[in-house]
Image (cartoon, rainbow, N blue to C red):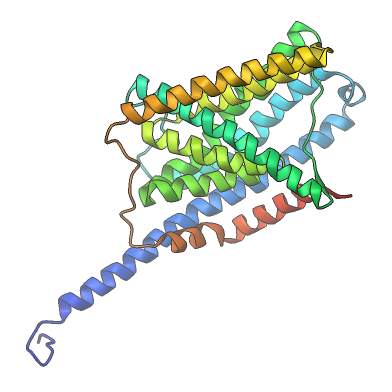
Length: 336
């Protein structure tokens, strides 16, 4: 017997449609929560492994020379990045993709090389803008009596030491962090819309830096890198942007360490920065022309943006991870 309303319309289809939407919402929510749990557990493991390995380094025979040997510091930094970041997020990626016939991280080629290069220029421009905004933020905090700081590294003076230093700051983070954030987190979230995937992965990228000097920059840069990755459909675009941005910082550090003439240093710094801005702006204009009608993927889910963000943030592992990173961040904040 069919159920009808007073006009004789069959109501079963209506009930079935309502039930279908409800089931779809629950499935999508649980899927986002699964990714959130994997990301949160990966961050927790990252913090614990980093701290454990740091303790082991200080207790080992190399602990005595670690503080005074910049080359050794760079080697340890590489080791910590690979073991402390790559391994937990690889495990998280496996957790997300278990039982699925899909790669943990898709390292496909970009849709076109010209688009990749121009998107890289756009990403660099956003990173430069992020540096500027972060500088303003730090000055504002300082003006109200709050000093922000970040971890500092000693720059080696020898060629071999500097090569390893560049690897530890520019090459390894570009590969490992992009694998973790734009690979393990962003890629599986893209099915719920690129805007959401970009924002969620940028938030993780920001909190992972653990201080308010790097975190605001990482949030802005993370949005730019995430957009470039999505528009080119390749994680390699993110790796390239990340590498160029970090290499720029390394070059500036080398110049500061080598040039004692402040006037000469400022002139070289301004020249390099102006050239980088010029290239990134020209490349960004080219990107607008090259991308044509190509757009990031819209959301085809039954969930709103707020619902997706709530599902991603409010899981126990993610909350614990955020609290841990807030605690770490607080150590780099001092009241004057």
